[in-house]
View (cartoon, helix red, strand yellow):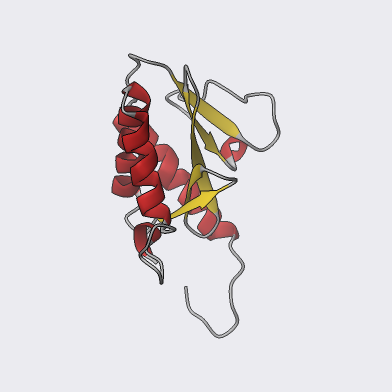
Length: 140
């Protein structure tokens, strides 16, 4: 299912829940989350949108790519396997001490480097698809 499409296109549809969160925020955090979402979709058109942990947008493809959490003073984009990704542009600025995750904290007024962000998304997808278990009898 692409971009969160589900069997039931009702209120529980993850894409609609993310739409509602963006609209509900109605400030720079909503704009930032919408921008992050657009960049993810540009970088990986086959991304799957999910809604987990009672209200966290999650983007996946062959495994989790990243989450988009909103707090009072930051929008936090956490890459599930960020520690394994090259970050030549230095976008990761949070959760740097862990062995697995890395995050990008975006504060009000800060811009996102679109191309560097999309490169991280593509690298995360490549990592997921390279480590995804292959099903017997199926060609990649």
